[in-house]
Image (cartoon, rainbow, N blue to C red):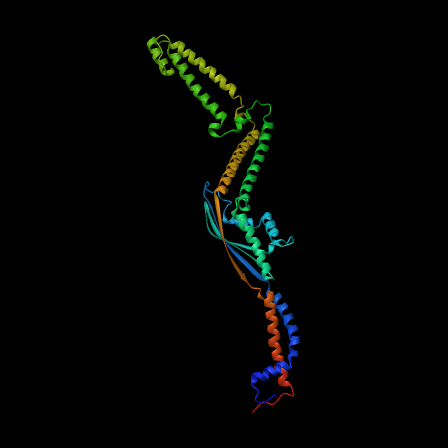
Length: 366
């Protein structure tokens, strides 16, 4: 090599002469790339979903089942998990690899907003992104569509509650029916307590009115015994609510008393139920249980109807932002970069160390 050769040319000549030194370090670089990739972990694909649900028609509290918390709970539903796995296309995929976190923004009657973040890690960046996309696609559909799990879960839960309440009511009603069998009890009338629809209450109210009118008619009839025909007619007119001629007061009042007594007898036949106070304590307790269960059942079916109205008027929106972190050495390009860096850096160090220690190294100028 000429003394006039530049330093860069001299270095290039040394590298070309000892190129074989790179070979063992290339092998070392490959091993290092594999090892570092395993240590640093996989790629993490993240999706941040901003969720917004508005329910336009509902009773107060009727949307408690269509809020941001239920959207998060949906992701743990076995049906949702199976749909995500089907979208991924790997039957043996471990759904637990997904990490789901909720950050509520605002929750109130008819309004629910929040941020749901899902992430998944994998040694292969493309595979992590594919898994993330499958999750987001399934979630978007189930959250926004009328027949999605977000809505059907809400209605199904209300329906299950109503059906359980119905079954418990029917079971208790059957026990009560067996307890009063043969006692001439109008069971439906005893159980019914809903205001104007209560036949016993209606009968009792009408009976009280008739008894009051009968007492008035009987009192007026008794007072006509020593009164003048004109005075008796005035009393009868006041009781009957229509004009009565003099001399006709007593026959009119007697007819009124007879009609009221007949009406009371008819009401006695309409409601032959055994008075509640005559039931034994055990049957009375069972009666009260049936009444309570009937009201619970009615409320449960009302809630079911409210839920169906709520889901019909619910509007859900979703905005998705994607991010990616870590795992660069897990990709093919990252591993190649690590292998190349180890090969070049350590190879050059070894080459120039050998050149420095070589006895045949040409003397330096000066």
